[in-house]
Each structure stands twice: as C-alpha cells, then as structure tokens.
Length: 168
Picture (spheres, rainbow, N blue to C red):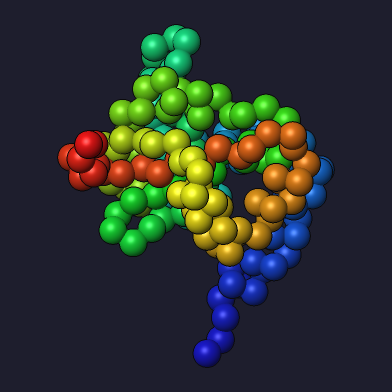
C-alpha cells in the first residue's frame, strides 16, 4: 500500500520537532496559525493536527478567570478520553494552560469540529508513568523535550463530563 505524503514525512517532522530551534520558534508560530485556521474552518481543521492529533482547549484562566483558548496536540485514547502533554515544546516553564486546568479542571475542547465538555485530571504516580510510556510511543520527540527541562512534564487526562469515575 502506498504511503501518503504525511506518512512519508512523519520521521522528518519528528526529527525537526525535536530540535532546540523548533522549540524557540514553534510556540509562537504553530498556535497562532492553528487559531486562525480553526476559526476560519469553524472548528473543523487544525494545521498542526495534520501530523499529530489536536484539539482546541478552552479553559478558565487560573489568575484572570477568563476563558483561554489554546490549540494543543493530544493523544486520543480508547473510550473517548484524551491525554494532554504539557511539554511547552521543551521550554523551561510549564505552559500556562496546565496551571489553568489544575485550578479549573472543568473545560471544553473542540475535537474535529465538535465541542465537548470535559474534566481534566493531572496524572501522577504509576498512572502518569503508564501514560508517559504511551505518549513516548505515540510521539517520540517528547523524550527530547523532557531531556531539556528540569521539571516533570505535566500530563492530563481529559474525560467527557459526566463520564468521570466515582470518587470514593
């Protein structure tokens, strides 16, 4: 079976996205392009999602209390959940959206043109380690991001609202 252009270019994209140069430029260029294209296509297209699945997260700002829209790569899971990776392109600080989700876990995502209400949960311990292993298999460049920082990259699981497990 013949591979698509996206499938053939994936190793090159992974190599480029692992570089420090990409980490310096991408945080400014990729989200800006994604926001414009997402708005113009009424939520149906994210440019960055052509290589890596993506959502637009709308979360309440931890300090401002205002809605904050952020295009993000994600790892979809079986059962309709998603893992978000707070890599910040391998930059030293946690991305702002992670603090927003810690403070206000109720959020909304746009996924393939559909808006979904979700609850975010910061993953810790063995659950985080299992998710991190899956994330590295899913997109190996996250390992180079983690190697460049002195912080543990935050992982969140997004669960559709109403489908969260009961708390004992």
